[in-house]
Image (cartoon, rainbow, N blue to C red; front, side):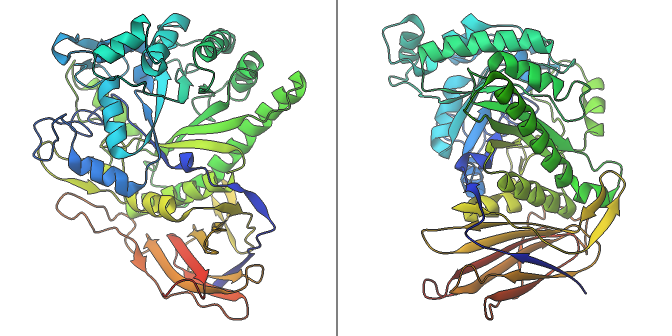
Length: 507
């Protein structure tokens, strides 16, 4: 059996784990809203039409922040359509996803849902077809206490207290030619700077996210970030990053190594932001908001859009995720944690039905997809400080990413309890023994080892009829001898290896 080694030492700190790293995304796309989080006729629906079964799974998933209402949808959205009496709301054509938007669910319903789910809202403003004034009006409606037109309108709609939304996106993917209101970097940068300045006049406490490139493969990548930040650096707190990894071509070694690309993406965005900071003499370091990421079988989308007319809430990219996809998602989470010093927000896209960890049937059950489990366990156990780990071990070749390390790891130390969690992925095709040096953290004992193994049934999926086919399974509890521990990582597997102080917990 091949072997890999790593050392864990509390002296080598990356940074604290932000709870905002475990975000999700609710867009008016497909059945994410209608039939996902909101379905008034569902047997579990509450008095506001919110599906209680989806709320329960959202809380179990450990979601901390949710981005809303888009996504591409926001670039043509009139926020006023989604507030006030539902019977008075207009039906609109949504150009982003070629659907009819009923506006039965809007900002007021989302805030009610966010409170019920226990998540922080992350609101996006439309800088595609709209601009400074509309963004300010929305902020006034959401956050101003009262005594003005839009704040009093909110109060008349039943929300006496301000919503207090602190996290705002300045548009979405406006470098993309598919975007309604697509702009050049200079056009967007100037508009974003003007909008950000005005919004902070209304509420200085807000944190703002400028649009980065839609993905690392854009021809303007890095040049877009540099130009946008030259306009906006002093006004914003984050620059966004988006990426999706497509398994459609069947190249399993490459899809398993997708985190190599995400890692490079983050480093390049950070380098670009730091270049602008140096050029403009800023002392403040900008953070990254990785507010769209996931596995996505993208070749299916165009067929979905082309074969239908204008309809309400069609089933759109409802991908069924495999055991392999779960391992990839677990590794992407490892990468986000490893950059905890510069990635302050991350949102897996999306929450329900649309490339989502939660799937539903209209009028029927909701269930956990395979990718639900690594997210939920990481959100539950990644608490404290991320420690730097540098595994030494075998590597292998991939078509997309070249030679990659077969083992990827990150460690999180909880200073309050003294516990340690090592998240590890074996991206290779053979089992590997992972030797962990824990002498920097004396007194640890093994608590548990959970794994999602895609080596035996790589294409296994969860369905409404078989919702627990892909779940984490316990492995042999790790032992610690003279400050050293060894565990077996099955091929193509995601692993959670947990240790506790020997006097603090009974296994």
